[in-house]
Image (spheres, rainbow, N blue to C red):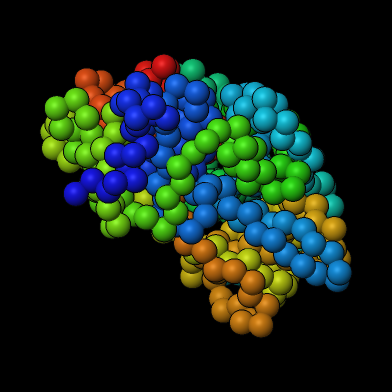
Length: 427
C-alpha cells in the first residue's frame, strides 16, 4: 500500500496533482549525492540509505582529545587536482575548502623483516644492512625497470587481458618486487587482499599509476583532504536542496511498472517516476526487479571485498622502524593490512597518534579502539574490467538507472563521473 504521505507530496498547495516528477535515489555516496545536487531543481527527490548516516564511503567522525574537537575521515580521505577534476569542480561550486595532505608510503614485511619507505634515501635505506644487500639493490632496480616498462607499454595495454602477475613475469620482474612493492601498493590503493592483487588487470593498474604520478619516485601529485572532514560536501549539498531523507531504510525492490517505478523498502512502498540505484552493483542487482538478462549479466560480474576499518591509537601495529612511519603503511604478515597514520594524512591538531587499520593483522588494544566500520570495495578482474565499457547499457530504455564507482577505477572521482552521466540522461 502506498503511504498517504507519499500521495500527499504529489499534490501542490491548491490540491492539484503536481507536475514535478519524482525521483528516488538509493544510496547516499558520491554518485547519489551528485545526482541529487544537479537534479535538485528538476525533480522532487527522495534519498534512501540503509545506514544511519548520509555519505556511504564519505564517513567523518567527530573526535575530542586534549580539549580539542576535530574530525577524522575513515572512508574517502584524499583527492588531487590532476585526477579528480570533476570532483574538484563540484567542491569549488559548493565552497568546500581543502588542505594539503602527505601521501608517503611504507612497507613493513614481518615475514622477512624488510622495512622501507619511499620518502627519501634515508627511509629507503632505513635498515642499514640493505646498503650492502644485493637482493635489495636488485629490488630497487626492479622498481625502476617496472617504471620504464610501464611507461613504454602505457598505450599498448589498454585492451590487454593480462594480469599484473603475468605482466611482471613477462618483463622479468622478481617475485620479491611483486611481494614487497607492487602488490603492497596496489592492495593499499584498492583496499583488496594483497594475495589477490596478482590477478588484477594490468590494463587497470598502469593507466591508474600513470595518471596518479606513481610511475616515478618523485613525480607524485599534491594531494589534499577536505577541511573540516569529507562530509562537509554532503552538508553543503543538503543545504542547497529540499530532499526527503530516509535513513535506516533499506530498499528491497524497485520494479518498473508501466512508466512508473514501485519502490519497496523494509518500512513501506512508494511510487516514483524514476529511480537511480547508486548502490554497489551487487546490491543493485538484488534490488532491480525484472532486469533484462544482459543487464543482470553485467552487474553480476562485479564483486566486492569486505574490509574492516578500525580507528584506533595503538602504535604497536605500525612499522617497527620509527623513521619509516608514513601516511600509508602496508604491513605484511600471514595477511596484509593497510594502516593510515591519521596525524600525517589528515593533519589533525593533536600530538596523540591516531591510526586507521584496514583488516588489522593483529589484535588491537580494546581500550584504544574508537570505531569499527565495515566497508565494501569493488574487486576488479581481467574479465569485469574488460566489461566496464559496456556498463552504459544498464541505463538504456529504462526508468531505473545505475551509478557507482564500479563504472571505472572505484574511486570518488569515478563515482562522481558516473553520477554526472545519469544526470545527463535525466535532465
